[in-house]
Amino acid sequence: MCDEHAFYYLNRMTQHVQTMFSAIARRYDAANSVLSLGIHHRWRRQTVHLSQVRPGMEVLDCATGTGDLAFAYKRAVGRTGVVTGTDLNADMLAVAIQKSAQRRTKVQFLQADAQHLPFPSNRFDVTSIAFGIRNVDDPVQELREMLRVTRPDGRVVVLEFGQPRGIWGSIYRMYSRIIVPTIGKLITGYKAPYQYLPATASVFPAGTAFLELMNKAGGFRSCTMKPLNGGIAYVYVGVRDNGVG
Picture 1 (cartoon, rainbow, N blue to C red):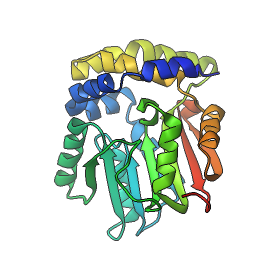
Picture 2: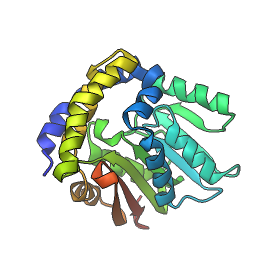
Picture 3: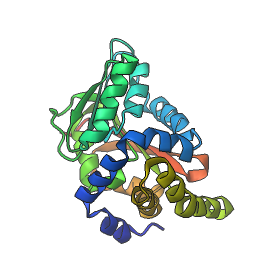
């Protein structure tokens, strides 16, 4: 079972986390591709698929980072759809905006706190967050805020790391503790962010424990989860109840 107290202790340093992400922003994408062997792109495609997003819909991607999930949503909603990506970190957003210009992709990026979104209630068909909910101070409050800006019958989608078990889990934990910080430092010049990331992932509520957080947030008519690559990551999808907001 996840140690939620350990998770919240690790997470009570928001400014420090932002400083770490700023330091690695320019090399973040390169490090992700190497450390995940490119699998993170497939995880994002599966996230978009499970969101059931369709052409013409409006999507919000919270904690968008360098924008990869936002771009994946834009491909799904097409020209008639609208995608907005928000992040608290200006340096990560600068990379996302640069990528958007290079790709000539119309995605709007805004600097915003995911727990206090600057949008009216009931606006988005899909509201998502990938590998970011464990970095907020209060995940339940974050889920409630995502629910607030999502339309009735819309979907709140979370992509986050898990804790695989058995032999595969042992291999993964060794990789996370030893290989990830070493390679992360080689690529970005910084080791601390790649020690922090696996440390928080190892204690963050995953699987049924995360579904319990969604139930605690309230406002979901149904909640489902799908493990990816043996539980290294999960996609959680909550359908907003008509009675919220």
